[in-house]
Amino acid sequence: DGQVVLRLRDETGAIRVKLGADEHGSGFILMDEATEPALQMIARQTGIPNSPTTTSITLRGANGQEQVITP
Image 1 (cartoon, rainbow, N blue to C red):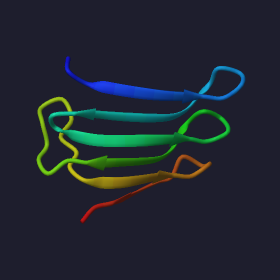
Image 2: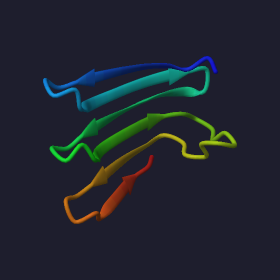
Image 3: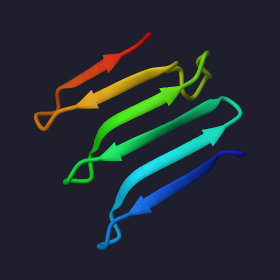
Image 4: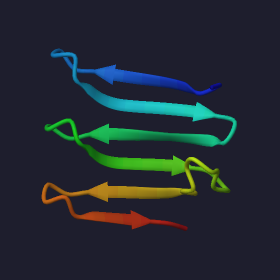
């Protein structure tokens, strides 16, 4: 689909970092010790049908609580 994704894994093979880019923008995700997304950053000026989020930073805590920061 034209998207490029780089996945960094730890010594057990678990994905810890994902970095992606395509013509609509770029982003990355940092996983916590439970391999759940803890920090996600998206750089995109306009939303697209399957991903309406524009530029944002999403933080997720251990309790599942989420905070989204937008410009």
